[in-house]
Amino acid sequence: MAEEETLRPVAWTFGAFGGFWGTWAVAAADVQHRLHLSDGGLGLMLTGSVVAGGVLAAAVGQVTHRVGTARAMATALGAWGLCVLGAAVAPGAAAFFAALVAALVVAGTVDSAMNTAVAIGARGDPATMVRFHALFNAGALAGAALTGILLVTGSSWQPAFAVEALVCLTVAVVARRAPLPGARRGPGAPAHGQPAPGDAAPGPLGWGAVRALHLRALAGVFLATALVEGGIDTWGVLYLRTRLGAGVLLGAGAYATGQAIAVGVRWSSARRVGRAGARAGLVVGAGVAAAGLALEATAPSPAPAGLGLLVAIGGIALCWPLVMAVVSAAGAVLHPRAAVGAPGGAIPVVVGTFTAIGYLGWVAGPGIVGWVADAAGLRAGFALLSVVAGAAAAVLVASTAAAPAR
Image 1 (cartoon, rainbow, N blue to C red):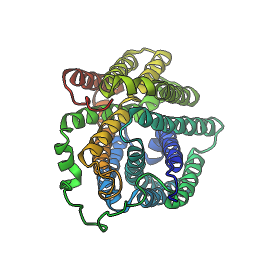
Image 2: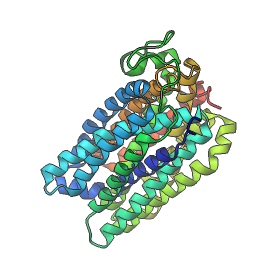
Image 3: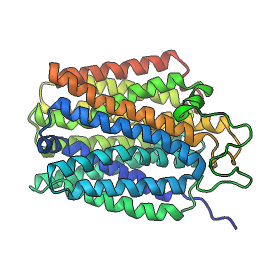
């Protein structure tokens, strides 16, 4: 009897991955101080490392298509966990910088692998995608809370990284043997590295599949919303702490509250999003994010700025999982047979390519805001993010880019 498929290790991965970024959001100011970086310098470090991570994410989509989700996710988690552990125990600034950059680069492989496993298991269901991404926000909340407590009590934030690294390494061992969706190739599948009859050529990093599925407009929208999300994640708390004089507790509290709202928004809206369709959810999410960012950019004191931050986090939380729901549904349509590469057809390739697009946008956000901040201040950077989010919502209203997923 075949072993029943499970997504439990993938759920743990979403939580651990969120914990890493929650720690990063709260500790970014301390990292900036330790490495003696300007706002632009911090943005440049993120840009270079996460762009490289996006390229790796697209490559992992191609690899997962051939070797299956269990092997791809276990390898990605193991490598990433070691990098995060290195950043946690690095004794000097140079070693810390190298380990942190490596962790940011390898993070793209984990993102691609875990989204691919859920996409194959969910078969494009928006509700399932949104709920799994809620686990990411739950992890981010826990990571932010733990890091805030460590900093408030006078400790270093690095033990939070150590905990997250150990969780990742443990899950890597479990995932390698777990019957994940797409973990094994179906009967009659071609040998590793050989295409099945009728497979469409995915093109460089899967862009050919994106063209074949008519997802180029959605790719542009995803780039914009990921740019906004990256700007919020990196500069939201840092802005409160360094520009408006908010303490660690208020800054971390605002981020943690925002993540709690994101969990609530994603979990409670999953069923309604499934009924209304992805485009409606994306329009609402981008529009709410634009309003929250506008409030944070114009607020004269920490309290309303923190309110704007958590509103923006809650709005943008809908965008990434809904885009992934669209592309996974489209990938299954392109190759409906279970025995094309890894089970799930073109899903691994398309999800990997969109993860790369998302990472490009996510890292462009901090870089752009950092450069604008050096020239005109962080208020101007948040105003720009508000315009980008509003433009993404407008494009979605005027197009059918996200129409397929319901």
